Image (cartoon, rainbow over all chains, first blue to last red; front, side, top):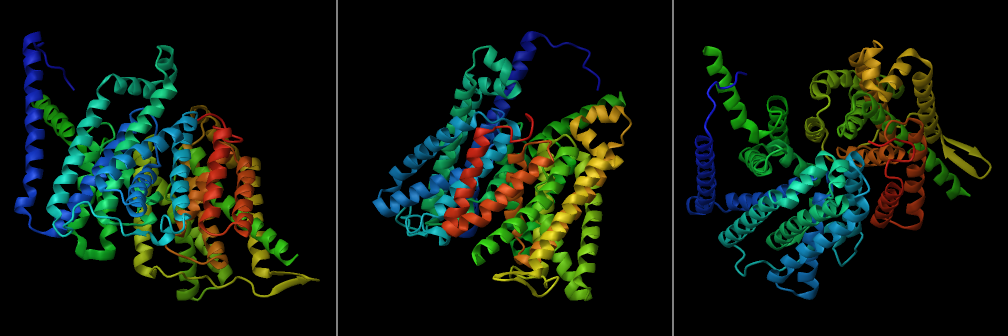
Length: 333
Length: 285
């Protein structure tokens, strides 16, 4: 690839960057407005239901990616979602707490459990961390299954109070979960690009160098797990109040793997990756709902296409196109 | 007495099956450097393939066992060439392709065979009796077959040229390349052996415990536990870790039943991992 011959001046460069920022801001606002107006055009309750589930999983996938920027690969994320969901479900069912209290409480409890797990687990590195957290996630769900009447055991927890009194109107849920998702995304974005996020990226690159310049490695690794778990716990709690029925099977090992797939298909390197990935991997198989048993093949096909054709995930498509165009233009010169 | 013997045979059979699958997984892990999350699905498909050979083609169970091992091993060659080799060194894409393989295999089996629990016919019938002790021949044969395969694998890894090349690659990949070892060839061989072992274990477990489309997930978790407990880059550690897990899985349910016993197995594994973060016999990742 050839370099551009003319060197842009400093003012031209800064105005160029400013333009890019405005373009991005306009793009994001446009997307948010379109998503917020969707219920006006879509009258179908089923489509709304799928979109609400997608919002919940977007929060989970984005928070999973936030943990990975510190170089840890957590495979317990569905387990944490389960902790949040069961915490909200049990406090709501057995203590009669209203959803407006159970959801933040579930977030805080999940954060506490995540940080308690993070403390001993910060000794483990790379693959051993991934596998240790995988076993932790499975273990948590098995403890919940063993909970007898309190957690509902294998058959699941029923009778959780709904978020809104009118259960049939999905529109309230839609805007509630849209708001929750937007708040979580903005919060996690700010978290990633503030000083703490920079420290975490430094740890991911080399934990030895990072600790030699005074970054407390284990504390930051515990902190990021806590932050990620807070949001996934809230997502799980929202899921519990939305669905009103919880089953341990929704948070097992496979659920974690699918969360990881949402992140990887979108591209683990970019912030938008998990958001795009979740939408693609949940919505496209829904179009082929009539295929019933064959529909997992659709998900597998999407994954296969991305694996073979887009090494950096779906979020890298603009990048790929840009490189291709520049190459062609330079080639013609 | 009766119960002690039954538990002991359970421990031995479960351990030998766990070790068979975990050895294949460890081959792929040490030589290709990938975490083959599709290993559970391959194990499951092995069981169903054997069942199809026996039921549909009416083969003798023993012939079906051998044929299953060979055919799934050939599938392993295909997987190595088209699914693992293009992404070598890229952890994320390897995980994705493994999930693709798992989803495709599980869905296919689910559509063809349904979700009900099937069972392979027993390889041998009859019960072996000495005084008060009685063990079915089926169990003895399963165990003996497992042990024979394991001994053969150990002999292969330690005494043949291919095995030595495998060990060289798992110790130092670049060094092995410099010595003129054909890494692709050895990787294909490792895939061949790993998938074949998983398929044979699938057949044996299918006769022992029954077949279901999602039995691979359970086995995959067990195998991950064994390999991580043993540590990366070790073969002998797998035997000890496999024995520990087999013993836990067959002895704990005697005292605690149902989900609590599974949870305590996981808790024990996590604690062991925290005590030795790099596994019992391995080196730092």
